[in-house]
Length: 310
Image: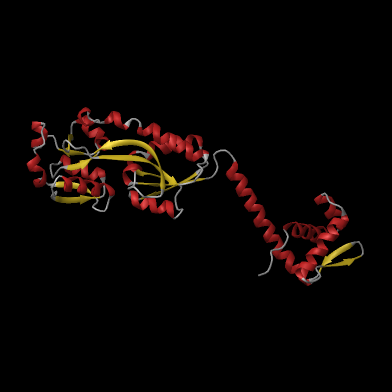
């Protein structure tokens, strides 16, 4: 395997080719003429051919020198670009932030967080990869994202989890639903209800399934959707009931267009947080992002109906 060329020798060669003078080259590089001569001689020995011919006090390129000069300019330009890019990243607010987030986080958490983040890091390039919790964990493992806002994955998942908040899933019904009218969930009626539930492949759906399996119940799922907003609208129309976190329907709960009711004596809670790879040292922008997530989500527990607050 060929060894890479010495960048200092290449720089001296390029400047010498441009000036045609050992004296001028030495001045530009703040070196002695003998140092330049030694550098060019070493480069010629390294490549195995003569690169320069002397013509009086001037030097001109040989055919081999012309070819090397063409490549050397590109090499030094690329090295300069790499250095400039790294220096750019080191400055305040520069760089990138690659995020993964569940659809719920994308819709209800990230807008407020990113609006605040952009005020301090206006030149940071932000990208978002939506996906369910397990999909986002895979994105972390593949180094396609830096941070993830999602629910705490199951035990054994090799990621660092920074807690943000805990919510509780509840039945959401239209105000005229019999449960809402009486203020009481009839346990025997739970399996017979029509449900409008979120994506069957989602982490939340599996949590709901496991919860009711332990209650020895199987829910009658009539409609399955991938949009929280669409689910809420169908529930308002009385086409079924849903199981969501009340903070997602906070506005509707305040307007009394939806009613939140507990699933039962046993609570079904989800733990939300920011995930990243173990051993990762967070950048300033990433630390700020985590802090903003804490601030934004701190209000969520205050948005719950009082009888659902843990």
